[in-house]
Length: 420
Ligand SMILES: *Cc1c(COP(=O)(O)O)cnc(C)c1O
Image (cartoon, rainbow, N blue to C red):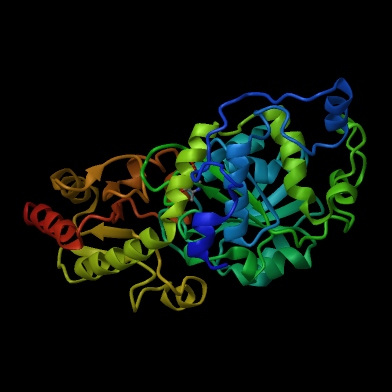
């Protein structure tokens, strides 16, 4: 089935007389007819037993997300941050390292460079545009993964996924891709060689600014039995000697993430949140088309204005990322535009405060147009050096075009620019 159909039908198929709409199973627990049956579940997790690890409503959404990304399984998390964290913890332990490009979400930079470091996991940052030799030099014997973002928040750099997949696979480690801004409507990283895909579902997928969430999707193609990942192919003493690759084959990664990480850390979404996310997903294809159309129209308008120094929008002919976007995101590059206004930070703030329709908020990829100044908000914790590495100019504004009529969005920009 094609994306539009999957968005409506994957994950939940009602039986005769069952509710048309996917029901909310609001229960922390599940009943079984014997002690023995429950005991068996602790040897082999084949059914829902406790909603810290799985729930039928969340599971339906997981199946939909796995289908959309072309993966073999998915696990939802209570935030995008939890998805990024678990995606790494599932392959790295204290004493390990992994490679990431620095052109990623500010919260992820902090997680990787500061918090994971405190737990003994080292993140080695390598510029996404560095040549392959430089990447190879960065690998150590303990390097267990490569991480990057399809369409970086907020620099909008387009990642060469195939290059990173080639590099990661030549060292027998998986490539993990944060595909939040693109969504599987605009890019499917697994098809380009990624092994694991993570999302903040709080953005376009939810779409309506209703609930925070994340997901990890397992592409199911990576060989965990290559000698580098004993935790996948040796008995898990914390799960009665379960051997993930033996019991679950190519879904070993995602089952291990659930039975170890979700069991122990517990960052599973509530059934009600998954229900709301599902409503967002149902209309994702139509919304993404309109975001891309409005985004391109507004990007062209910004380009025509003398007050604007730089417009970054990879869907715009002439943009530095245009050629690569034609390959990885041929149907459009979302509604997010980065602009730099002449006159630095002072004018950026004045322009943002002068907007009346677009709101100033800590969000992006919402149905309503919103703006944010990364250097003073989401990326505030970064040093000037890290800001530059993440592709962020101190005067940069992240302009997230919503689904209002595009002429109204432009009129709002026009009146605020006129006040500068
Ligand atoms: C927002 C975001 C995250 C973090 O997700 P939360 O749901 O806010 O925890 C991770 N990656 C990207 C690209 C994001 O935009």
